[in-house]
Image (tube, rainbow over the protein chains, first blue to last red):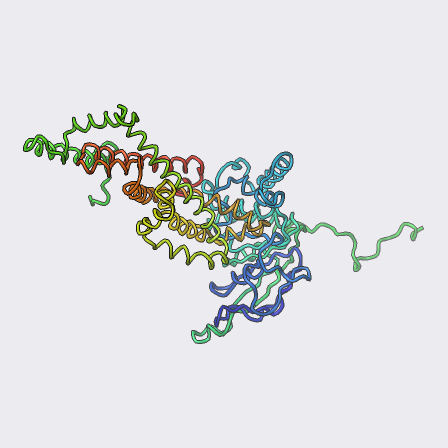
Length: 274
Length: 272
């Protein structure tokens, strides 16, 4: 559970965000939308710990958020999310290597073989099998973002923050990666917060869409009034991580019987007739 | 068709590449022939045959006084000093450059200092170096280090700061410590740049080396050039200058080859 309580963010005189209060329950998929320059990315940086709020508090499971990025929060940016000097496998392994060896940051022996097996499984999961030895520059944009997801997920973060991760991709590729994203969210114990400017994407993926807007946007007001939350839409029918997907192809099929409910006629008991 | 769209074929390219060198050699040969026709004992532009003779003498016949093959002794002394100076500079650049680029505290502490000392003209410090460190190898190597290291430090620090912030944040979210980020994220990405920076500093390094050797040495390419200058021995000076150039070009190509070989991914970025 992430609780954002009356958060303000100011840079000098410029107020960027004001009066932001929001609770994000576990395993939610929240999409942050809004016009450009309205502070969505700033808000994500607050969640990431890259920036600190000027006022207000952010807590993760009741504890104040660490003041710097850490491994409980994974991230995928639109660009520069993967390391150009490492192969696909090296990129995915990196987090494991940081964890295992404090000074050399390298895995050796059986621990390395184990981590490689785990990394390969994850690489296959995101659809990159066969590309393990390629460098990111040899991958397409969509593949690079898949790699960035795998790299973040190997650390099993509690929260995954996405900053317009699919914004630079072609529509077809984007649709494919949406399918992947939804599967990962369903199968992993993960809360996702995604910044996007694509409404369609927001409503396709999210359980909840939160819009940022500047209520006062006259040029003379811009500096002293920041953006705040203008709407908070729960997607209907509700999507639940790990539950049935309302958008699955057979959604229009006849409803499966859930068993008798309260308003049904009472079942005839065999003993009553006798 | 516009000139900007006309591209030479491979053979034309080769021809164009060689043309300036051939023209220079031709101009030399003509000038030399004209001067020697006027005055057979002219020393300024020795004939090609004389040059070949001298090269043969310097490179393949032991010197009568010392019994050494002078060209090779000179080359080894000079390269030893040059690579010692460049090696020390590279180590300094790596340590300080990365620290300045990565840590705001170190940046606040040392960046202005390196910016200031990189502006000191190294040759102006040469007398001080000779006085303090004597006339031996130390002062020559130190001159190269002073001339080259501050610029390499600054270049590397800038390169580190140019790394996208996103990458560093990403490494942090993978649980990396500052040390781990330095070792696994920053270092491998700036090493290719360090090699490129080293290549660009080859010219200045040679300049400082020859300046130091000109003033005080008992062997070395710069020493030889300034020694034979007294006898107007252009037949030695010209080949030595060409030889220094060849060495510098060779080192340059070698370093670039090394970068492409050791860091194959640094080539990919160029084409992508």
